[in-house]
Length: 212
Image 1 (cartoon, one colour):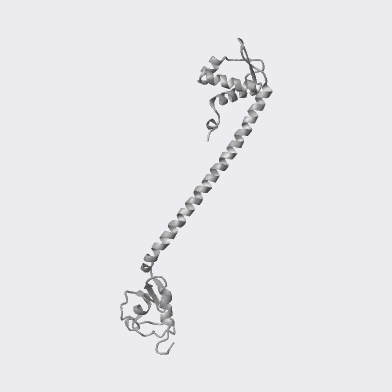
Image 2 (tube, one colour):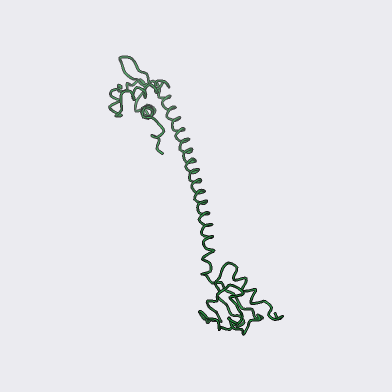
């Protein structure tokens, strides 16, 4: 935010005059233009100039002499005033940057919270979508279903999983159907609800007629 947003116009004018005095552009004892002339120079009302000059008089930088005009009194006071203003400006800039960072931090935290809610919502929705994505389930070498057809094993009835493909070595058989035969080391691509992969693994290892 610019300094003008903090400083009234009359204070900006007083600061500009003080800076000219501090730099020597206006020497001690020198007469400054009258209020009407300053009002025209700064494009403000005479009342604004009156307040600006009053501020400088209050800190002994200028003096108004009735019937004579406005005169520079102290370059030293002008320099001190400019330095105080610069220090306050630096303070304000630091304060404003801190406030801006705090606001950014709050915005980031709010955004993170919003994204967490979105993530939780997406995760909830994915529970209904996950069945579209296949799990890979390996047929153990000692499975009791080796050599057994899919329909004879009642695979779907026992696991709730649907075999959409079988990977055997480098060959993938899509939609193998109920007559496909399980072989040791087959990779079954199975779809189903959450946990279907674990049920399939347990099923392929289960005991059948007392055999492992």
